[in-house]
Amino acid sequence: MSDSTTRHALRRNTLSIAGSVAMCMAFMGPATSVAFNTPPAAAGAGYALPLAILLALVACLLVANTIAAFARKIPAAGFAYTFNTHGFGPAGGFLSGWLLLLSYGMVAPMLLAAIGTYTSQFLATQLHVHIAWQLMTLLFGLIVWGINALGVSDSAKVAMVFLVLEVGIMLGLALTVLGKGGDHGLSLAPFRPSHSLGGTSGLGTGMLWGVLMFIGFESVATLGEEAKTAKRTIPIALFSAVIVIGAFYVLTAYSAAIGYGPNHAKTFAADASPWTTLAQRYWGITWALMLTVIASQFANFVSGSNSFVRVLFAMGREGILPKALGRTSRRHIPHIALGAYMLFSFAFTFLMGAKFGPLGVYSFAGTVLGLGMIIIYILISLAVIRFYRREHPTEFRWIRLGVLPAATAILMLLPIWGQIHPMPAWPNNLVPYLIAAWMVIGAGYLLFLSARRPALVSAMGHVFESDTETGTEIAEQTDRGVRDTDDETPTPDRSDLQTGGTQ
Image (cartoon, rainbow, N blue to C red; front, top):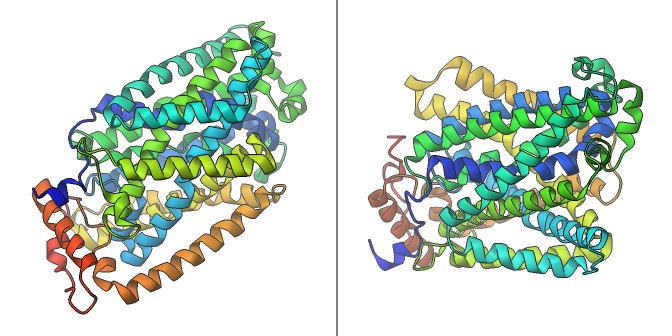
């Protein structure tokens, strides 16, 4: 393998199944999701919150089925960008990757703001030590930067430790509430649609925030080039994460509703910190919950930033973004993409935080992430149908690869409706327009690339998707294509760009 290609290679076969599961579960941020997403979800779904979360679980299982079908054939770091290139062609793949850049790009700013302000509040309320949230944000950001610079395997070990801690403590509180019978005894009433405060729209709102809780499970697909036996590891990690953490989410949502009881449903829906209320009522303390949320945010930050950096790296490696982003260090770490992302995240968090405050950053970035990822889930679900019918017709199954993906796309329309009706307050009401403007810019950039570098556009989504030898050849072809002039650059032979799974 040439030195040029080595600088574009991730370290292969370093992440085990357990590490893969830990990374995507940590990205989901179970304790953070429960603590921060329960209030807006309950504001719409009310006492029927567990039903909304159950619907989100079903929808995400369907998405996992779609991603697993792609990952069995294309274990690459590009995720939706690479998948949809195979399903829709270069234009569809590029626009999916462009939207993924915006969506995943909000992960670090969202968590930087959250962990900074939450730690600052913890120190002030529990230890009476006052440190500005910006300093805590900077400290945690630098620590995570250092951990991720060590490589994905070390990041997974850190994520796993904090994941066990956060799930264990939150589960303990939920079981305490249920063990004491909640406020009015145990029943199945929280699973009745009639208990939704906002009717169907309320369930849609609850489901939107429920899907937000799950976002991150799909991130294991970005680790396909580093996972051991990726075509087997990725599907196992996907379903394990969704089922295990999904059951945890439904249980905690149920215990929260039961903890307030049917007679206090409106109080539950209006409480800005329901889990703090529950911890004080059923445990008599709140500091343990606060530490758990901080641990969750930290693990979420470690794993989430890793995933986005892999997408940034994949698009840089192919020349869609600056080629420097597609380079790796001698230890095969995408250090330039990591550094660029962390610097952007610090700037975004501090500048927007000065205007809207840290929680405003969290809310805005989370809304962009949620709505963007739901659109991506829909696109992937439609792409997998076309991908198998066109490239693997003998393996196409109408139920698993036709009906279920189509049902996923339809079901995901419900949380989109919950997001835009009623329209959220400013500045979150700008999110749909921001996404639309971002996609228009992306379409313009794609037209520019098509006119100036047609060979590069033709090769989109095909770099490093197969074994090392084939990947080396494609990477070198792409490098040459970017350096050569348009007239001198031949269009790559499509047969050379097929992966091992698509031949």
